[in-house]
Length: 419
Ligand SMILES: [Mg+2]
Image (tube, rainbow, N blue to C red):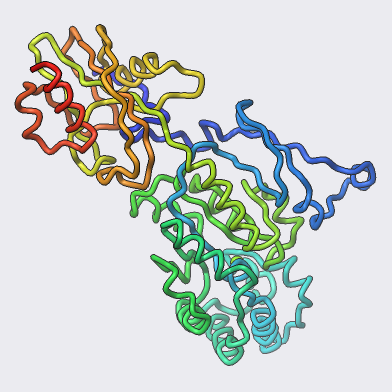
């Protein structure tokens, strides 16, 4: 059976390849001659300086705050957040409890800088290096015993509450992803009054990379819809392995040098800076997406309808997004061939529809739907992975099917025109 290439950005559910479409970006940083000579980067300046952004040659702009938009056109629906060092200012009590555990085992205390240089996730590696003689169960019990009496000292980092409020106001799915002990998180988040901001809480996660990949699959969330914000190299690596955007806040548990070397998509000085990332990503996301679709008629006078998961299992017409630089009709011919294997003739423009947050679509979206009619000499449909099934129906049967709203409007219009 003939297989056709899956569309990269299709209305009916194209899946951009990991690291693929529009993921390439060029960032140039203006360094001073002295910085160049020292071959070092002052990270305070690093985040305040202006970055030049180039998106596939289509758009270039500068902005302050250390932001670079990596994948133009992605629709972010899900914000995954680390807790310690990202939202919570807990480095001091964590270091104190850690040192008490080390002292119990006859190991010298770590300074704040030594801790930030040595600590890493998954934390088994850190403990094994310093206390090879102790079991993880023993260490966890000791840590819990020392940390609980001092965890009331944990505070929110400046801007954390405002960031969570902003996520809520955008209707984003806000999810906690942290290695923190579940009881510690419940206690801290309740005490700080932020528990209700999270749609889902994933605590006690040792290996975030593996967890995140599986979680996205379980929740049927495309990696391109999510951003993971954290303060450690492990957060960056986990996000990248899962294909989500990665945003790093500085000043947490990992040193700036380690974080910079790990090359996240965004670097911001703090969680307050992450709000800026969100706004700028949303500024991009707010643009409506132009799409094409066709009501295709075969030689028997029947119309082709396809049923897709992305449109909540309703029936609709095949089609997809117009690519940058592509003419609308060319996009229609390409999308229809990719999704159905059909070649079109007699293509006629019918109408344009504003689809603003269409109720059946699986996530908030704004499409500008360019609707056409066309004829196919062949009735042999070869679906790619975007549609579940197809049917050729007589026009009078079509309106009795469970259609999505834009398709129902198109069919009613075409039928009224033919009367
Ligand atoms: Mg952290």
